[in-house]
Structure formats: structure tokens, C-alpha cells
Image (cartoon, rainbow, N blue to C red):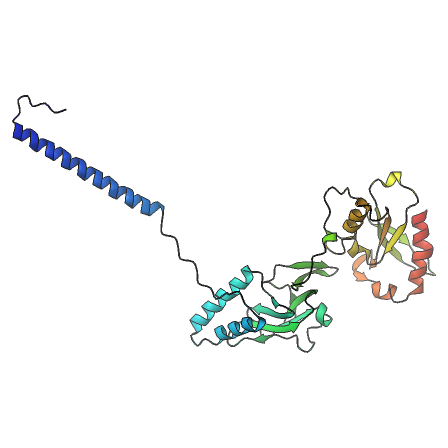
Length: 315
């Protein structure tokens, strides 16, 4: 509260006006400062990047879009829009591009020639029809095929003398020769039996065991592993399953037979069993696989399994 004692009324009014104006100026400045601070802390959102990806309504629609972009005369625009389409296809897990029973295998990169080898051509990249064609002046190669709509196929890219995984395809499938890229057709159903059910108590898989075959049979050392079901110590007179290519079937990433057996035994779909996984590889050199000799109606291998290995397991 202002006092008027010893002051002229006009002076008091002028002083009050000056004070009010100062308050207004201060408030305006603070408001401006707050606005400026808000702009610094909360920048305008960046515009979403452009994309040439669409929800393709047919295989022809996809190829027409790809061809149209490849035909753009402006090289900078062509490269930019092709890159946007490629990135969108990768984000949507559509490389290879699949529609109904048609597939466009795609590769983007520097290469003179690109081919595909896999389950579909006996892993022979020189098979007619499995070589990629460069799309216009781009660095994208395309190879078109048709497969059953419920197929699942392993493959690799062959660039020159190099066999590589498809860098744009996230799906992998392990095999006896390492990982492959995996093509999943639209009606393929994931084998749920290879996923361990809830609450399953797993059986045991032994370390590698060795058995020296008699000279009149194989005449060399064979490696194998033995699966025993949960609670094996309290079980008796169990049937035995003998599994060829055992090193693959005993691998959860490959045949996944251990998971299948555990699930079936747990659900009482089958009685408990013992499984013997016979490894066809030379224990001293795992790169030497003898399956092509052992499995081709070889009576000596059959005698080894029936007369030597089965007797050894039973004992």
C-alpha cells in the first residue's frame, strides 16, 4: 500500500503508472521467454519419410511397381525411391517377395551374376531358370519361381564362387552343413510339435559313445548318443528307436526329435522309449560323412545295427 504522506497526488499517480507498466513489461518478457523455451524443448516433429511400399494386391502389381521405379530416368530419384522400397520390403519381412504360389527372390548389391541354390533345384545354381536378372539400371537382381503354397524351402545365394545367406531375409534354418536362408510360403504351418510344451520334464541325452564295429561288418568306429526318458531309473523293458543321421535329429535346431519325444511321453501319447542316435560321421574327422556308403542298401551297416549296436544297447 502506497502512502501519500509528504508526496503530491500527481506524483503518486505517475509513480503507480510507472510501476504497473514495469509489471506488464516483465510479464510479457517472461511469457516470451517461456514460449522460446518451449520451442527449444519441444521441437516440431520430423515429417515421416516417404515410401514407395504399398500393400500389393497381386504378384503382377509388385513386379510392375519394381519395374516402374527401375525405369525412372532421373538416376538420383531412381536410386532414392528404390532404396525406400527395398527398406520397406525388409521392414515388412517381404524379401523374398511371396504372393500366393509365386516368389520373387531378390538381391541388392554389386555383382556380375547372381544365382540361387536350394531344396528347389538340388542345390545346383547352374540349373536353368535359377539365375537372377538385373532390374534395369539398378543394383537389384530378381529371380521368379512358383512353389506349392504350403512349402518351406532352404536356399543360399551364389555370387561368383561365394555361397552366402540372404542378407535381406531374417529367417534361418540350420542343417547338417550349417545355416541356410529359409523361404516360407504363405500356407506353410510352423511345426508346433518341435516346441517344448509347458511343464514338460525333459529326458537325458548322453555324451558321444563309441563302438568298434567288427571287421566283417563296418570295420571302423561308430559314434552315437542315447536318449533316456524322464524317470528312466524306475522304468523297465523299454522299446528302443534307432535313428540314422542321429547327429541332426538329436539337435533341437534340426530334427528336434528330443523335444518331440519329450512332448509325446509327457502327454502320454506314446509310452516312454529309449532312442539311439547314430552319427554317420567319422569320429576322428567330423567333416567325413559316411552316410552315402552306409545307407545305400549296405548289408554290412544293417548287420552292424542289428547284431552289434542293438545287442550292445540291450546289454
